[in-house]
Amino acid sequence: MDYMYLLLGISFLVSALGWIYFIYFFSIGYGLSISALAAATAIIFADEITLPVIILCAVLFIYGIRLAGYLLLRERKSASYKKILYQPDNTKKKPLFVMFMIWISCALLYVGQISPATFYLYNSGNGAPVNELWAWAGAVIATIGVVIEMVADAQKSAAKKINAGRFVSTGLYRIVRCPNYFGEVLMWTGSYIICIGACCTAWQWVIASLGYAGIVYVMFSGARRLELRQQEVYGADPEFQAYIKKRPLIIPFLPIYSVAKHDWLKG
Image (cartoon, rainbow, N blue to C red; front, side, top):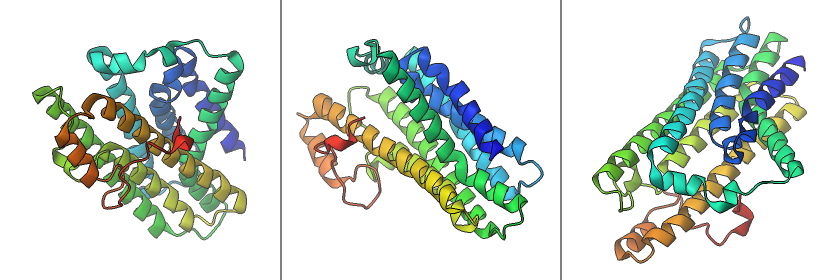
């Protein structure tokens, strides 16, 4: 159990970037926390680690570093992103209690997200008959998810350079409106299914499931915010209205076209 305290300490330390600026709890602090936790997992369980878990930890590490770097660069170079990032609701000083609760929630969530790999390695090191096939399946799915997210971000950047005032509907955006969010959901799905072959105890399943459910909620909440923003900017465009009626919001081929009315997704 000591390894969980260590991971939680790392998560608290890195996610504390949110004390510099509130949004960093969920953005740069999130990316760097995942990278730090992935690296820590590989180091703590160096004697038990297997190739598929090495791949998964490497994928999560790269994901976190890339996300933090991407957001930092975007903050420096994108005027429209700065406008969103520093809108009044975000810059308004939060009560100390609220800040602490958000910090604690984020730190716990990030450990929950990374926990399937740690449980797999911990249980394996204690003689549990883990199934490496699930570890391989998880590593492959997570890798595909990260690739999709990277491609989606690159396609969006390229499209905005051509026409900054138009919504993006090319590349992966022909299939789904938030392919970057879909890629992240897929990545964490890959991480989560490792639990199936990890001989997890009941409390391990609870922690991993809460972490997975939490990040899926965050992705749909983010998609809702994006949907509302796009309606403000492109709502009067008939081409945009036709596009959103035919393209699912996050999951390809799953006919969920809007979550705007679901206030429980409000982050």
